[in-house]
Image (cartoon, rainbow, N blue to C red):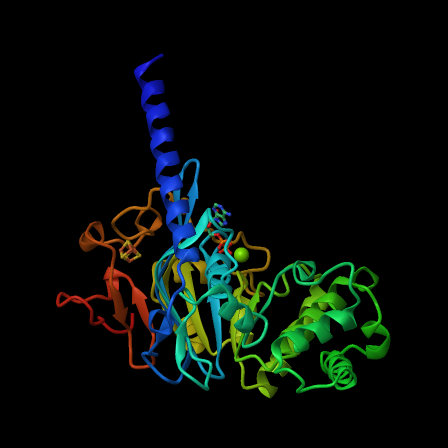
Amino acid sequence: MSEAELNRGQKLRDIKRFNAKKYKELEQRLRHRSSPSEWEAVMKDSENVLEIDGLKVHFYTDIGTVKAVDGASISIPRGKSVGIVGESGCGKTVTSLSIMRLLQEPQGQIAGGAIRFNPGSGPAVDLSKLPQEKMERIRGGDITMIFQEPMTTLNPVLTIGKQLDEAVKFHSQKNSNGSRRIAARSVEMLKAVGIANAEGVYRMHPHELSGGMRQRVVIAMALMCDPKLIIADEPTTALDVTIQAQILDLLRSIKSKTDASIMLITHDLGVVSEMADIVLVMYAGRVVEQGPVREIFHNPCHPYTIGLMLSRPGVKSSGKRLYSIPGNVPNPVELPDYCFFRSRCDSSIRSCAGAYPPMARIDASGHCAACYRHVNDAGGASHGKK
Ligand SMILES: Nc1ncnc2c1ncn2[C@@H]1O[C@H](COP(=O)(O)OP(=O)(O)O)[C@@H](O)[C@H]1O
Ligand code: SF4
Ligand SMILES: [Mg+2]
C-alpha cells in the first residue's frame, strides 16, 4: 500500500472517531434533564422576536465536518419582515431548520451560538438549549414554517381539515375550544388564504389539490395558532410563475394584517425587494451584509452583494449576457481563516489577507458589511458610502 493510501486510510479513521465522539456528546446532551436556568435567556433588544447570535451548525460526515453555518448572527424585530438571501448552499435552510430544531441529527448539530426567542409573554428562551418537549409546544405554534415543497408539511393520508384542526388542538390550552369551533376556524382560515371552496377543501386530501392550493393550505396552517414568527423558506420556488405571484400577494396581505414577524428565505432578490423590511445577505454560512431593504438595493457595499445585484435579470439587461460572479464558494469542510469571498473578489486590498473581516457600520440605518473596504484603520468604523 502506498504512503498516500495509508495516509488517506488514517484520515478516514480519524474522521470516523471524531464523528462517533460528537454523536455520543449529543446523546448525552439529549439525555441530560436541563433546568430553566440553562435555557432561559435575556434578549439583547426586547423589541426583537428572535436573536441568532454566532450560530454554528456542523454536519459530521464521512468526508469531514461540513460547517454549514459558521457564526451567523441574525436579529428579527417584532412585526418586521426580514429577507435572507444568498446563493444555493450558503446555509439559509440549515439556519431555519436550526431555529425549528429540525436538523437531521446526529449528523447535523448546533455546534455553537445561541438562538434567543422572545415569546412576548414570559421569559425569553434559547431554542438551541430548550428541552424537546418544550420545543414541540413552540414548533408549529409560536414559530411556524412554510417550506418550499408543501408536501413536506402535509400528511398525504389525512384530510386538510383534520390536519388544520389537529394543529390548533395540539397548541391550544385544554378545553379552551370545542371541536365545532375549531373546525369553523379552520374553514375561516382556508377562506382567508383565498381558497374559494373552503368547506369542500376542508374535506379533501392533499393529492386532490394543485401545488398552489396546497401552498395556500400550508400558509393557513402556519397562521392557525397566531404565530409570533413565520419562517418561509423559498415559499414560491416550487410553483409556476403565475401561482408564484398569487402566493406572494397572499404573503404580502398577511404581512399587512398580522403582527407576526416574517423570516423570508429566498435566492430571488426580486421577492425580497417587494416583501422585506430588512435584508441579510449570507455567504458560505455567514452574514456578510445587512440593512434596510432600500439601503441594500440602492447602496450595496459588500462585493458579493454587488455581484448578486449585477447577476439579477432585469428589463434593462434583456438580450445582454448576465453577469456571473467568477469562481466557486469555498469548500465548507475547509473554510479559510481569511475573508471567505477573497478568492472571488475583484476589490480585495492588502488587509483582506488578514483575519476574517469584522462587521463594519456603513451608516446609522443599521446597514453594515463584513468587508475590509469598509473598515477603517481603527478596525470597525466605516469609510462611509462608496
Ligand atoms: N444533511 C446534510 N449533510 C451534510 N451536509 C449538509 C446537509 N444538509 C445541508 N448540508 C450542507 O449545508 C450547507 C448549507 O445548506 P442549505 O442550508 O441547505 O443551503 P441553502 O442556502 O441553499 O438553503 C451546504 O453546503 C449543504 O451541502
Ligand atoms: S474583505 Fe476584501 S476580499 Fe473580502 S469582500 Fe471585502 S474587499 Fe473582498
Ligand atoms: Mg434552501
